[in-house]
Structures are given as structure tokens and as C-alpha cells.
Image (cartoon, one colour):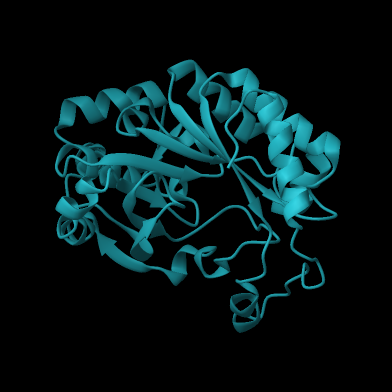
Amino acid sequence: MTVLFGTSIPVGQADAAFASAGRTPAAAATQRPSEGSVHSWDLSTGVDGPGTRFVTFLSGCPLTCLYCHNPDTMRMRNGKRTSADDVIAEARKYTRFISASGGGATVSGGEPLLQPVFAGELLHRMKNDLGLHTALDTSGFLGARATDALLRDVDLVLLDIKSWDRATYRKVTGRPLEPTLDFARRLADLGKEVHLRFVLVPGLTDAAENVEGVAAFAAGLGNVSRVDVLPFHKLGEAKWDALGMPFTLHDTPSPTARQVAAAKAVFAAHGLTAV
């Protein structure tokens, strides 16, 4: 099922509605300019997809990851109500520079699939109006909300698999792992390119069997072109403090260079490009 501004309709019907109503998913759903809750936007290089990218960070996330470095994006109400027109107008200023760098546009969060119609509108217009390579940055937990119409406007999915061990995944995120795995399999069936992200947290996600599990699953998909092994850091701790939220990983160290290299080697042993 897909939720369109409070109305649940089957995914197939949603795709048909989008196709029949005009240029964009939001036009089919609302017949008015699309708006969403936006935390911020920025230009970045190297961490949100290839090249220099215009990244739109949407507010709201169903996960409560212990190491989240942007906890201020967890609640949708903390964002600013913004029109898709305004986001596209801002991105348009940088399209020549972005294209010259081999970059594109990324819709991130928070969790962008918490606002699937707005995210779909942005991806569609970034790709079709601005001619940019598009990426969707997601945990995959709400992957069922991504219609086929939305995914057709996505060139690359940046997918977080935070743990293979189910108990650890729930401890890290507060949610079950299976929806993310289901979404990963669906992306593989669609032949959608995926960059996988795995955060290495000493004493939490770094167990050898945990890393091996993620690596084996990713290799079996056949569409994972890159794995980013991301060392845990505490750069967002001040934000947790400012929000009055306890940062439970305060005493957890960052992994050593040797630990990161060992994790990358596990992914490489499965034939994956790990960076």
C-alpha cells in the first residue's frame, strides 16, 4: 500500500494514477503544488553519491539510531514546510557546476520515504526538469512506500544495512531488519544500482559474524556496486545534548584503522568494492 496524503491505495494503482495525471507523482496525488517538511539542503562531495551533489534533507525518521549524527532530523515537525518549486529553484542555481563534476541530486533525511509523494516529486523533477543523476538515501525500512513510479526516477539507491544480527539491528534502530532486506531484494529484482552503507561500531556492529552476514547478503544481490564501511564517530553528540536526548554511545570509541580495514576485507572477499 502507498499512502498519498492520508489515503492508502495499492502500489499499482498509485503508479497508474501518477502516469495518468500528468508530469509528477505529486500532481496526481494533490492537484496542487507539492510541499514537504525539509530540514535543509546543501552541496556535498563524496559522501552522498558520486560527484558534487545537491542534497535535500527531509525531516522525520521512523528509526532512532543510537549513533545518528543528525538527531534533529528525526521529527518531521522540526523541519520547515517547503514547496518542491522552492527546492528545485535552489538546485537549478548549481546544475552547470554539478553536471561538470559528474554529480547529481540526492534526496536524504531523516528518512525521505516517510514523505514518499514529496520525495518522488523532487526526484522526478531533479531528473527530468534539471537533467541530474538522482540518488535516494534511505534505511529501506519504509521501502514498501516507494512505488515503482518513484523508483523509475532513481538512478542510485544509497541503502543502509546497519546490522545483520536481528537483535543488534533492533538495538541500534528500534526497528526490525526484515523490511530493509525485503526492499534490498526488490531493488535487486529491478536491477537498480545500490551503494551499501555499513557503520562499524566497536562492541556493537563489529562482530565478525555480523560483518560477514551483511557482506554475504550484499554479494548475493548482484546489484551492489560499492560498499561504504563508515567508522562510527561522535560528531553529532552535541546535537543530542542540545535536544535533551541521551547519547548512549558516549563511551564507545571510534574503530581503529585496522578494524575498518578488516571489515572492508570481509566485503572484498565476497567480490564487493569496499571503500
